[in-house]
Image 1 (tube, rainbow, N blue to C red):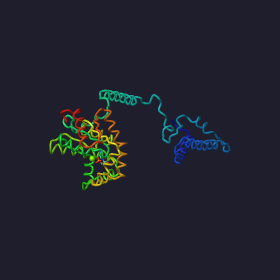
Image 2 (image 1 turned 90 degrees about the vertical axis):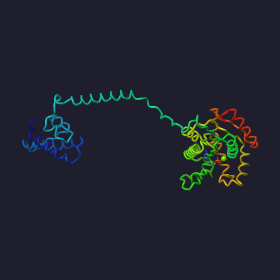
Image 3 (image 1 turned 30 degrees about the vertical axis):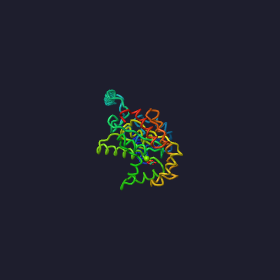
Image 4 (image 1 turned 135 degrees about the horizontal axis):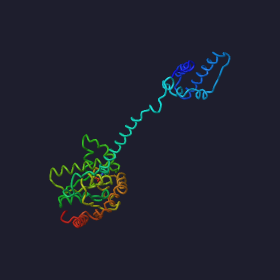
Length: 325
Ligand code: C5P
Ligand code: MG
């Protein structure tokens, strides 16, 4: 389409102005207005030099042929005629839509064939309870767990693994990365992070089985916290039962203070004992309650003499385990 001479002039002006700012609709409107004012004045000047015609931008836009209106700074829409509707190609869109829908249907069918997403399967314990016997031995500090375990080892060929003893050995092992952490926890009667204790126990069990073939374990002072219980039974071995020594705090305190005279333990002093009692009530008793609710606890009163407590222990264990003791 041949543009008129004033039209071409207005367009050139528009192009020049377009370099002065971003091609926002308002900028272009402003530029078109300026261009039109110049165009109109030059047109009128050529016929009648004193008449200046001004028009609003909207009037100017309305009067411009559609092909000359544009908010873009591209070339189309001015000297180039617009494409008519009949020239717009629809088939590329149809192809895209067809491929898109096909892909979606394929994906949907594939998902239908996939098994439903479930929780990750629980880890298999390292040892089967059919093969390995684990008895947890719990009770407050000073309840007499160690004393009773020593007798059970002698009479029933258990291997005694004390979580506290393993932690103290790890604490003193040269180069241990957990030494300082364990020392701090023990002094304050706090529970050592379960990963450390569970790993020490698992290693000790493996070593024992490898060295002696013995697969009967008394795990003393463990689990002292629910996370230890869950972790151990999940990755190491489910326990057969919990042997719980029940003793009043006053009696346990008396025993611990007596033991502290010769034990050399950093936590057998009045202040640490108080903290250990609090940890036991708040953190360890819920473990006993948990197993009690599962009917897996053998409870023994450990206030009497060691002999009496042991007699009671044997009787109760025999009742539950029979010849498996
Ligand atoms: O059982 P024992 O009294 O020897 O434990 C000493 C200390 O070892 C506890 O007070 C606690 O700091 C730590 N311990 C632990 N987790 C366990 C057993 C002992 O953190 N299962
Ligand atoms: Mg002990």
